Length: 170
Image (cartoon, rainbow, N blue to C red; front, side, top):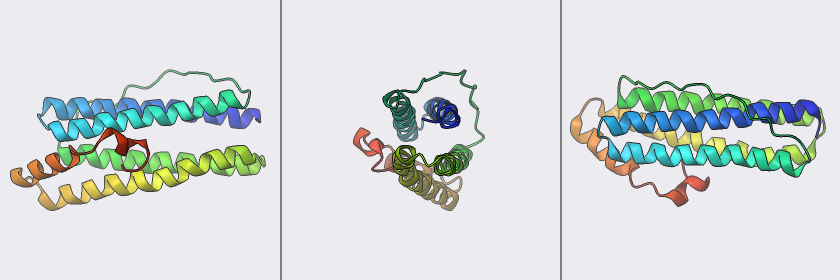
């Protein structure tokens, strides 16, 4: 594994751990606001992001590289509304997509076919991540501050199961 790719993968695994922290922060915001379904959804999302980071750890180790853990930034902890939290989530997923695409470009630059093959799972995963969160955002925009609509969305997202978070859904 080229050093530049190893360094970039280490940076990215840190970004995935940050994603997990961000979703844990959102989970705690929703729990404090008594949005139990949304808190549950965010907890599963945090678990999924940790799994993504571990995929990078495993890949680096399998290729004889060196994993370097870095400090994880403190995530945002307050959100003005349910909608704001999910809009932040969507923007974050778009950022992660851009980062994954940059990694693919870097792997191609170094003709690292193993890295390219590894990253293809993440390319597909990000399409699902963005789509799922955007769907929630669009529903939240439609219901606005309507309490019944928010309760319905809370119930709907709360039905997500752990098996959904393996990359098959949001």
